[in-house]
Image 1 (cartoon, rainbow, N blue to C red):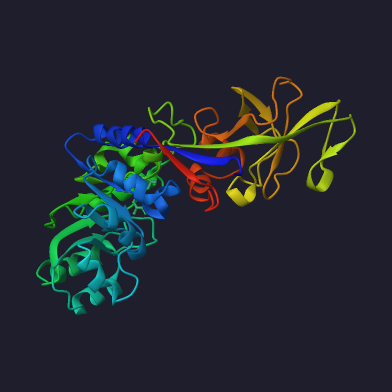
Image 2: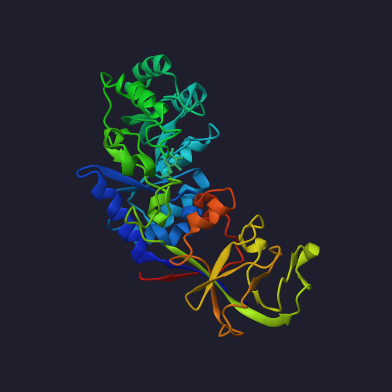
Length: 359
Ligand SMILES: *Cc1c(COP(=O)(O)O)cnc(C)c1O
């Protein structure tokens, strides 16, 4: 078998969910498990959290079907609502909570002939300008949805654009928009993603919606997951599949852009960009072998990458290589590549087997 595995530490996932709850005592939290639980495997993540999570949140009906199959009774929120009018029937059958993010969705809901009424989350566009009603439109639609037969609980939600930037003026402005609707009668309110869970207690409301923090990565550029008390859930581990010595002046890899400045020992590692390792990793990016950091040598290939182990002479064929995890935080690699941990985690491809530990 190809030596490349994504180990998923389920005890870390539980730790991180509990940490989110401790940030906001007395509030409830939807564990956000969209995008296959940020690449970790939705079914396993949901099963692992099912006895402690208050609910789950996903991005589509297809994702909801998968979660429902392993969490029969759980509260399950469709974050963007239904994409087509005929999805409401299935959403109601599945007992979902649905976001209603605009007029078209509200009309489709009111025209649907669902048998069981659904919990509805009206989405306020408080400033991100992606989804949601304006405050004025929301007031009008609140009146129409409030006594609709299709609606069980009527709830309010909104989403931050800049919660990962502490002190950003839009955070205050969005909060103000939300609070401006406190006179409307809602069963529950929800506003906080991970960043707001961790640093904006005024936005905690009734239901949190933590995502990235559950997986042990940080939503902040300048605040590490470890400093936040989060434990990494995924460790991506490959192995050394070849070792060679190259003379000074020889090049390594595609494009021959990396040239040995001294006689060097090169290890070839069983992970490439078709597994989700970023091809944009710049020179100097490190992996860990035997607890020591060693730098990439040359470009990342589709199925392999090379590292310079000249300064780690004890490294040998078959040694484990951590691409990210406890020793190389995924956020650190992401930042070096000009992206965010969210993207690296969700882009680990299908061909990488997930192995669950700590369950
Ligand atoms: C993805 C998502 C979240 C979770 O965001 P994180 O930054 O991962 O915590 C919360 N709310 C909505 C509406 C989302 O789409």
